[in-house]
Image (cartoon, rainbow, N blue to C red):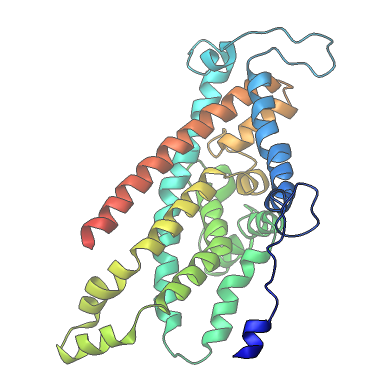
Amino acid sequence: MSLSLNRPRERPRRGGLLALNDANPLVPYLYLLPHGALFLAFIVFPILFGVYVSTHHYDPVATTQPFVGLEYYRQLFDRQSPQFDLFWLAMRNTALFVVLSVPLLVAYSLALALQLYRPVRGRAFFRAVFFLPGVLSWTVVGVLWRWLFDNQSGLVNAVLTGLGQDTIPFLTTEGLAWVPILAATVWASVGFNMTVYLAALSGISQSLYEAADLDGATSWAKFRYITWPLLSPTTLFVTVTTVLAAFGLFFQSVFITNAGPNRSTLSVIQYLVSEAFTNVQYSSAAAMSFVFAGVLLVFTAVQFRLMIRDIGGRR
């Protein structure tokens, strides 16, 4: 007791702006500075520069950049403009890809997670088999699936020929050209969603299933009233990230179909890149990118609102 009374009091550190200790009020900002600098350099500046480019007739080699206001935005909604048809065709193609791929990726990944969460033999091996394609670059994935569905020398048509069937020109038939794009996307992307669902399944208490077994619940009833409601936040995350990734369709349509046939698989990102770097219409491409970003923001906000309301209604 006497030792504690005689111990000298520890003086609070002084926190001046020049103090070399943690009490300096600038210390938190020094930790935040690197991220803040990168955020300004790679997020804020490109957005502001994009606004500048889209509101000027931008030419990187010209000495003056005439201000045109919202002219390039207006052209996207003017049927007489050369950009109108291709931009909205690309929007429709991308929306079709989202509608086709997202339900497939969410449902298939959930089914895989439910099967591979069980203690089946070789579970770790099959988890790796479904996850590993996701580490490949989209360039490799695109080239691989183009070869698989090639009209003449593709493996799929070779199998059909071996079975005595006629070959199917997947890559040059409108509608069928989406088959290799969807197959490649599901093959390369389903592993990530499956892993997220596996992590969520491990967080569900087994006591809930044991109580359901005592009540004589069937497998479907346990999924309907236990698994699915408790996976709702995970499904929201998986759906939103999958939708955003699907709207970013680019490499699959470039390397598998090259936007063909007849531009039936032309995606918005592919058209933006072509408008900027092939047609050298930077201002038009910038305006398209902002309109496309606005559509994504609205779509994501509506999706969040609907799914969060659905999750809240179940609680």
